[in-house]
Amino acid sequence: MDDFENIRIYKDRIRIFLILYIFSEELSGKDLLLYKRVFKSEVRIQKIDFLLRNPDYLSYELLLFAAEGKFDRNEVKEIVKEIFDTKEPIIRRLEMERFFFGAYEDIDDVISFLKSIDFIDFKSKRSIDLKTIDKHYYITEFSHNKFENSLKKLPSIQWYIKRCILIKQYFGDLNGNQLKVLQYQITEYRDASYKEYISDIQSDVKKLFSEMYGEEL
Image (cartoon, rainbow, N blue to C red; front, side, top):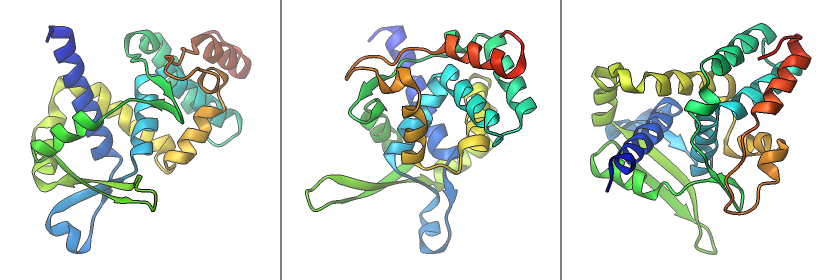
């Protein structure tokens, strides 16, 4: 395994864990004896991960909501300007393939690793046709303490933490299906062929930004 592959594996593990941790909810009652937090639905992981890996799509969705008056226009303007000024759509972009129901990447190995080191646990149910449904991912007390006392201070993951917090601030109330609907409204996402990488939309973001603010990105 080469260095590039090792770095990619490390990034995948960190990114997925941060999604599970930051977007999870606090637990109460008997579950609290074993776990600290819970995250519901693999679909939601995939859709949040897409926004994290594609800053241009995140920018576009922020602009759309601001244009509709759902988000503060000036706040969104500054966020999008910073994303493009720092060239995130190029530097931070990590492509995802179009699968049957939108952007998808197999995360089974990542989840298995996180479980093997006692960072998470997971439970699921099966439907009548034996499909796995209703996946719940649990943050253990061990990983909670590890993150709060040391991991969250690591310089190498600060961008991921801040970006997860930003996505949660604006889209954290949406479930996986709602996030999927938003992404399907974007032509390049919707029209991507099966197993094809979803193309970037930097030009679309720049056009919409110019229309909204009368400035160039």
